[in-house]
Length: 381
Image (cartoon, rainbow, N blue to C red):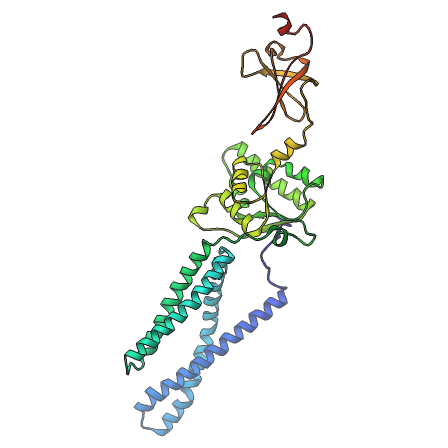
């Protein structure tokens, strides 16, 4: 997907990345070198100086031990840096999957856990006298246990706190136009391109990464029809990139309850305070229940269809039988279905009809009509 913008903060230019890498490498070498120097000196003071009576040898070890420790520490620094960067990358990916509420809850839990560990340590040290060096290890274990447990608990509590931003403030781009989250159905449908071209849809379009994965799954389907629809969805995205600003959101949700793509879309729209573009009727209903403004392409198509009133005359081709045996069915140019009473014998013909009633259904508008011409079958019957 060449050209799609990414919401994630990208690293700086190559020179900045090289400078940051050099600074980090120097910091690791310095820290490990100093640590090795101090450990080497401690080794001399507590081990070597007690086993050698020669003053010359002790003086030599006094110099060699810290220097050797510093050299070993400097040599181990690149390995430690590599492990650190790997763990940092894992932590970064984990942080990307957390919501702001989970991050805030984890931070509060961490602070509370450290405070509780400090209080418990103080009580233990007050009750148990002469605990000595073992107290240091006890304190470290207490801090680790309470910090990790409290941070995890805080993140879980934060996950249950739903923060819904105010759309007009947080979900607006620089021009003040609300951003929109686009779902898979509206991309595969393709009519969103024409809507954007006509200028009826403005502002940034947010396409979640999990929607792209769903499109990829559809494109790789063994079903030729699904495969064609998935590839058409990517063509639609490419066309949208040419017409407006399209951003890929890396935000994802690992909650078991949010394994469904629709649930993830609703959650993302809530966090961003964005509108949701879809053609899925059920997702549209869920969005309204959750307080999210949904822009249904099908509803827009119905809204812009010409208004037809009872008594108006239409010219229609009757192409098939209706639900009742005497009915015929035809379609207007915009796809609206017309049920022609007593039109079964007119199948395969074009005829003028008079509208008798208009019914608005969930699937769209349904028009009932009767043949106008006097020699129609209903007249003969």
